[in-house]
Image (cartoon, rainbow, N blue to C red; front, side):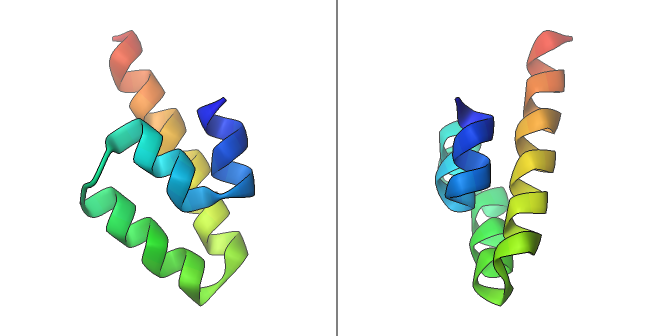
Amino acid sequence: MKLILGILLPPLGVFLAYGFSVTLLINIGLTLLGWVPGIIHAVWAISKQGEQTNN
């Protein structure tokens, strides 16, 4: 679900994965610069967070 939100609304997906953090601020900045960089960062950040919880 987070991954789908990361594609549709990148900052919301990152917020659900990390809460209010530096990662969220980076994603908001990238999304403001362009939708695609925000999506790429969101998918990367959410998948990275998923890897850390599985280990």
